[in-house]
Amino acid sequence: MLLNPLEKIVANLPYGDGFKFVDQLLEIDDTSVIGIYRFQKKEYFYEHHFKDHPVTPGVILTECMAQIGLACLGSYLMQDEEKPLQCAFTENHITFLNTVLPETTVIVTAKKEYFRFGKLKVRVQMIDESKNKIAEGWMSGIIIAK
Amino acid sequence: MQENEIQEALFKIVKVYLPQDVKESAIQLESHLMQDLGINSAHLVDVVLDVEDAFDITLDEKDMEAMKTVSNAIEIVTAKTAS
Figure (tube, rainbow over the protein chains, first blue to last red):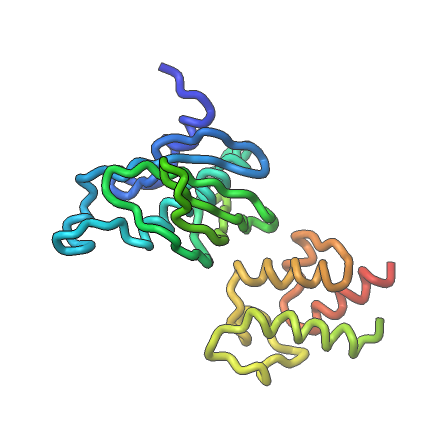
């Protein structure tokens, strides 16, 4: 079975299954990306955050937005590069507006502000499947070919 | 634009990206942006982009590599705004 270009980006992300918070990309182009992830009941952090009351941690939501908005969009923008890519999350400012419970699908949209000298900065937004806004803000990362 | 005006504008840009433990007074003409002022490579890109906006110029990889100190930045801006 051949992967389409969007599936290929997700398949080539450098994260292991326990820390990959992207299921699928819906759209991607030079300026923006839309991706989704379903938080499964079995994710390991629900056992601890919180005790007897599982809520997705803000850092995990931030990571999910960074994987879609920076790592996926960044690898798309660097698709002509033959050497393997390395990415590093460098900065973010995120406001959280709602919680994400287990078995929720989130939709992340990121719009490129700039990609210069290997640094990608995006505006990001996360909504849930009922269109409740979960979070919004901006983030940046470095993507280089080594 | 006068050299002292360029210098003042550059100091103002660099100030924004100083780490918490570096005082504003540390910014001198010969300060190395990364080694002396502790500006990281991601913020160096922001410095370059702010310099582009402030002086309405475009900088490339070569300019970025040459921009090691505040005074290097003044030289680059002076050369670009003169042409």
